[in-house]
Length: 164
Image 1 (tube, rainbow, N blue to C red):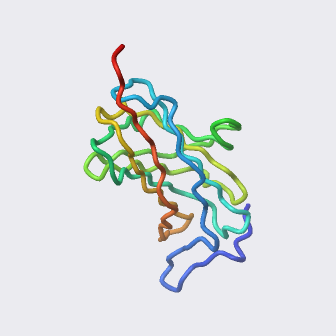
Image 2: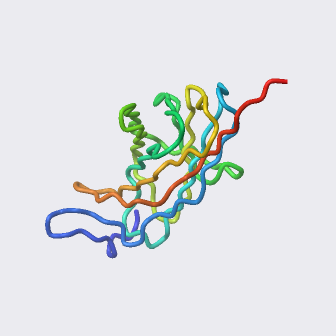
């Protein structure tokens, strides 16, 4: 169990990370337009002194020439990075809001400080227009009223597929 002596909880019950997680990177297994079967990876590090475990991650498409669609039934998480994966991390719930372009991943149990986690998900297919696609990453600590901490943007670059 993490040391909660440093957790920040305000008098109104809102919980904050003492030191928020860090977004490390975003990558894709396939970067061509219209590709079926690509995998997107988003890696986050939760510092030892976070004060609270990580309960929820929200990944939201912020920009790009077209919208991506994701299957919430095909989201997984594991300890480590794409190249150095470890044990699978249990997920309580995943939802995809097509209107806001946000994927919400709720972990159960929450992920302890000192852990690096990679979230893996699959677009139905890559966007049909090449370009830079930016995804905002927000982390929420465990708590009755968690405050989301914006961690930054992950970029997935999609290149126009060329016919031979």
